[in-house]
Image 1 (tube, rainbow, N blue to C red):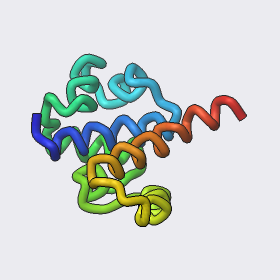
Image 2 (cartoon, rainbow, N blue to C red):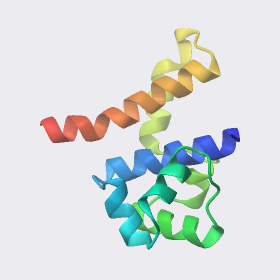
Image 3 (cartoon, rainbow, N blue to C red):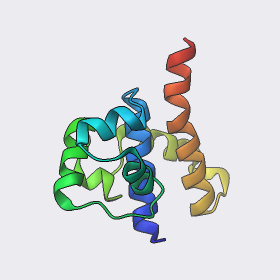
Length: 110
């Protein structure tokens, strides 16, 4: 599994959850099988450019964000908070993913 595909998949999943969409709902909007979306989110399948463009439109994020070239403002803020903790890049990435994935859960609870 490519690291870039893993990053892209995680970002698609995080953006989907932030928008309160299930995998089934997003895959239906995209016109693909839910299993195909799950492979993309898990980083085991590379989406076509056209599909990626549709995903970015539906989730209202840039292609650069999905490709891992830019961060969302909230992601930047979380990374700033973690800067001086002495974490490795992998640990920092994991903490950011946890923080971003927690937002939809918090929204459901509150």
